[in-house]
Length: 188
Image 1: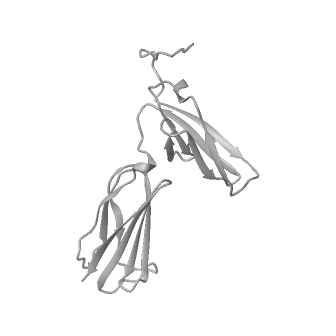
Image 2: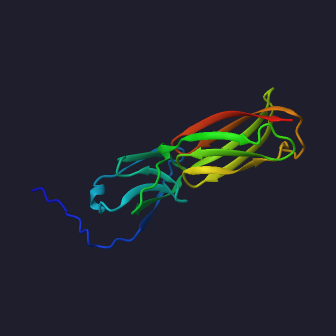
C-alpha cells in the first residue's frame, strides 16, 4: 500500500538543521562515492545540501543522488536542511569583469566582477611578454557584484612596475567549475 505523508503546513520548523559527518578510511587518495535515498523523509519546507566542513555547498541533495570525491583519509562533511535556497556551485558565472581607471596613472587599479555563485577569485597580472607581475586572491561567500580587489601597480616584490600594457587573467573557481576572463590595463 502506498502511504504518502502530508506535510503539516501549520508546524513551525527551525531555519537550519546541520548534521556533521566524518568519513575515515585507510584508502587515502581513492575516490569514494556517497549515495543517498529517500530525501522525501525530510519535510518539503527544507532545501537539502551537502557541504564541506566550512559550509561551502557541494551539491543540492534533492537534485543529485550521489557525490564522489577523493578522500584524504579523514574527511568532514555536513548535511544542511535549510528553509532558504542557496546557489549551487554549478551556478557559477563570471561576468562584468573590468579594471578602473583604465588607463591608470599612479593610483591603484580596482577590479570589478560579478559572480553567480560562491567562488575563489584569482587575479593574475602579466607583462605583454608573459612574465608574472603579481597575483591577488579573494574568497567570496556568495553571488553578487564585487569591487574589493585592487592592484597598487607594484610587482610581487613591492616594486613599481613600468609603463605599458598589462594582461590580466581573472579566474573564478569552485568545486564544480572554473572560469577565466582576460582584460588589459594600460599604465601611463
